Image (cartoon, rainbow, N blue to C red; front, top):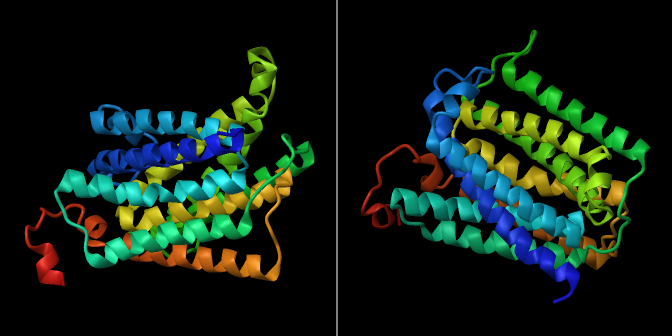
Length: 303
C-alpha cells in the first residue's frame, strides 16, 4: 500500500469517530437545549459521561485525521469525512432501536456514490507541504469573519431579527463546518512538520493555532448542537467542512483538481448528489424524531 492510500482508511476511521462524537455531544447538549448554550454551560457538560465520551471520540478522530492528512491531500481526506453522516445514522439507529426507511438507504447510496464520483472526477493530487504566511493570514481572517457574521445573525445581535431555533442551529452548523475546514488546513500544515521532530513542532505556530481555533470551533459546535435538533446543524457540519477544506487545499497548498469540462461536470454532479443526500438524511425520522420513543412498525406505517 503506497503512502497516499493510507489516507483513505484513516479518513474513514476519523469520520466514524467524529460521528460518534457528534451523537454523544448532542445527547449531552440536549440537557441544556432549553436554556441555550452559555459559557458556564461547559461546567455542566463535563459532568455528563456521554458528553465526555464524545470529547474522547473527537480526540481519537483528530489523531486519525492527522495521520490521514500526513499521507494525503486535503481535497482527498476532507470529502471522505462527509461519510460521518452515514455513521451518525448508524449510531442513532442502533442506540434508538429504529429502522431506516427506503429513502434513508437511497440517500446513503447517493451520498456514497456522490463522494466516489467527486473524488474520481477531481483526482486530487500534488501540492506543497507548507503554505506561505500571507496566505494563512488571509485564510484565517476570512474564516473568522464568516464565523463572526454567522454568530451575529444566529444570535440576533443589534437590530437583527431573532432567529428560530432550527434556523439558528443551521446557521451555526454552517459556521462550524467552515471552522472545521480551516482547522483541517492547520492540521495539514502541522502534519507536514511531524518528520522534523518534536522540538521543531513545538517551536512552530501550527500547534498553538490548532489549540485556539480547535477550542473555539468545539465551543461553536456545542452552541449549534444546543441551539436545535441535530437535523438542523448536521448538514452544515457535513457539507461545509469538506468544501472549505478543499478550497483551502487548493489556495493554501496548491493541490491540483482536474479542471477539464468532463471532470468539472462530474465534480459538480457529485457535489449535487452529496448535498441532496445530506438534505434528505437530515430530515429522516432517525434524526427529527431523536427525542421520541422508537416505533416498532414505523417502516410499515410510512411506506
